[in-house]
Image 1 (spheres, one colour):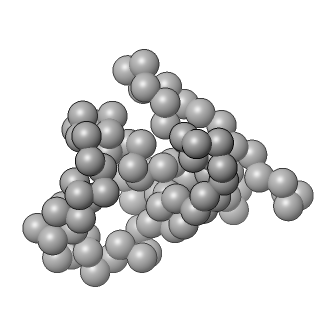
Image 2 (cartoon, helix red, strand yellow):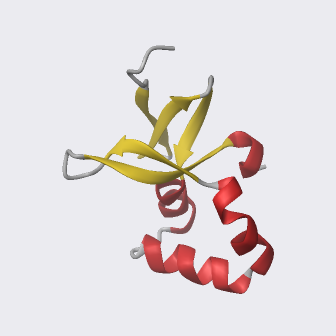
Image 3 (spheres, rainbow, N blue to C red):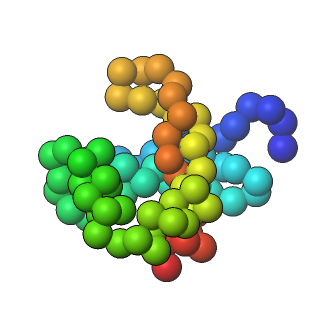
Length: 89
């Protein structure tokens, strides 16, 4: 693959989930998935509390989530925690 990444949007129940191709597989924005599944207003706090409650999740967070550049809602590209389907199951 070239240095230009493939970035797309998926829709789940009418909501956008950002995704990007990384190392030959699709990686999805963790924050977008959390919003769709929980209707959380403050995604950062939701994820923070989730990690506090689950010590195993917290200890593997760096393995599960990889910061990848995605288009932010303000139109700028920012590093966003992403996970592939291997860790989503």
